[in-house]
Length: 538
Image (cartoon, rainbow, N blue to C red; front, side, top):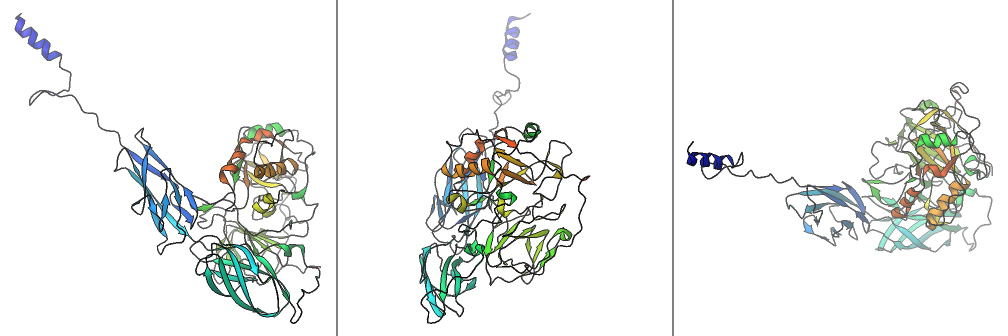
């Protein structure tokens, strides 16, 4: 063997495979850079003028999570487009620009070519009323001055639901002229137009007889007349249904069901409460089930049924053409509930799978009407706008009740699984499980008295105390331990989410008796229609 050849071969063998040297050898392979991408949530989003929305940008493919923000290409935005902080908090402009859509873009600091965008639709703010002047005036022509906030240039003053000739003075003041010949109490409110049309809670004014400076002597108005008019308006202390109604039953000392622990374990003992209501929008939809209160001028319109007409009240019903649909302003294809309270006749109207129709009519999967001054129950095995055959409204957590310091009724909630059975006050089943530990519709759970609520906020303590005294009633299939409420811009979402620390294991199932099953309760076929609300006795 020749030493020179051996060394040459040894040197060549030490060169790594796949490496190229010069023009004819091998070089070290280059590693391809990881792909960096950005996602942005929520997308799209709706933001009211003067409101805000937190956006979250997630960077994949890089440890550097920093991003820069632009609004319509302007770094950080500006007063007319809205501004965005380095943390992704977008603040809408004070007023809606001529083009009410802007684009928010997040750009990765690690790779300027990696971006994500979200389309933001800007909506008019929700007006509020602080005062109306005068509060009392004689029948005939009148001029009103309304002071408040968030009035826009084309806002309209409503008097008992009728639009008045309105003059825009400023964002905090409107004047309006009208005429009313009949003495009585009337609701004055303000409505902002689209985009994002919304109405303020009303303030009542008193019209007296001509030449009489004093209000007419009170008669015997229905208790529900205290309710203000408008979307999400205050009930002003009125509580639906009589004191002995099932929703108002205090079950603090009720017996625990013998299967309570098994049912709790089947649901999932560690599942936390989830408030299915709040302020602002999530994925472009309001959070919660909205309602609207109407008065005497609201016309009754036909209801056309698309699914459960044979188990529905036939109407007509006083549903406004712009009644808020669950999930507004982009209700999508969910349950699309519509809830209407009539403060003149004291009736509650609830629609499921609701779509505006022609000439003011509505299309709905089902509808039910409830006398707010009497105890009522659906015919057994009949649905309502809820799967349990229950009214929805009396089980909602409402901001005005919490702010007043007391919820004196049970709270509606959902579970993922239910069996073919129901417990009063429910009247209908919607089974999706054959497990005997799955809940029947109408099952009531009670937060244990031993659960310490003192560490929670005052708002959450009101909610939790109601759960200890009145419980929660299972009313529909859905995500487990989701409690229902009405949307309201005054909710503090971060605070509400603290309720998640309360889990299923902190509850007992209240004794269920009787339990109606397909063997013990067959479908009823009783007609239940109403061309208009039954005459009321005062």
